[in-house]
Image 1 (cartoon, rainbow, N blue to C red):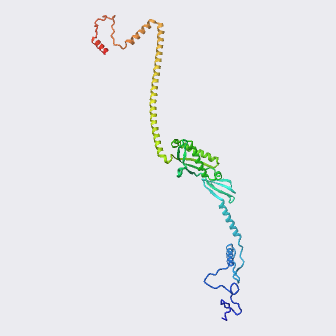
Image 2 (image 1 turned 45 degrees about the horizontal axis):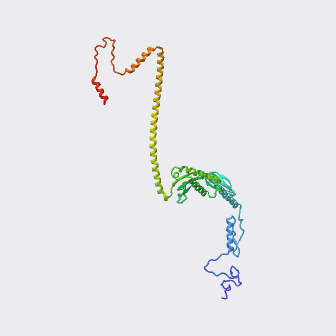
Image 3 (image 1 turned 30 degrees about the horizontal axis):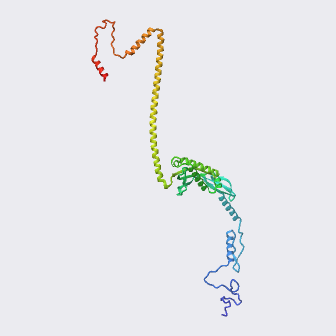
Length: 381
């Protein structure tokens, strides 16, 4: 034990007391064991600085002092090369942030410090970031809003002008014609379009009766609805264009649809019978009008014939009178002969000339008694 002058930890040394001491210089050291040794904080910081200098282009220190701390001079942290690389990287990143592409069906709205400045056209556009930002909006794409009871709700139940209830489904198809107005003048464009569409449809239905809505007026209602929605959206300066309105369904409520169909069937049967009656009336009237027209035409023809005949007789009489005034005897005899020709022209007759040779000798008078009796019997019957 006398030779062990290194302290209670058994450290050997020379007689001059120059033996190994601990790091704290008081001849003590922590007991050796199986656990890891914890490095000091200063040493960790030194190692980190050395690695940073190496990465930034400097060189690390190579010597250590007697107390285990690193020493030695390192190079500068930022060099010209690193600064140039950083500037180039910043410019590239700025370019990527400032250049954007707009598709053919889109338009962009550029904002300078949050205020509208311009509208970007399709193609490559430049918006110097961070002073100018851009928002790309699809302007030609058709967007559809399903309205009414299409989504299983009661929004399609509406009151007609004749106090009936009708269930209506329709679609509003729209796009954007002014992206700046669309972006800044409406807080919620889709909700605004839905609210305006429902209000306009209820207004139109309230002014119409049930039967035309269910049958023939769907196209007219769709046109009026499109015009009314467009006028309202234009009054909002919304930048929205209503392309068309599709009228999908207009039926009575489900609870009464069976009874309503029976009523519709009866009405259709009534219309059919009325059409049959109208067709019969039209046919009879047409025939009567045709017969009346034929009678009138025949009467007109007869009148014209009689007038022409009378005028001809008058002209003939005037001509005969003129000839009679010139030669009365000749004219009188001529008239007599013409009249006898008319009277005796169609009669079977035998003419005997008393002045001819024989004075009618050889002609035996004959009285047909049997024929006379037969004629008398026919007249009595």
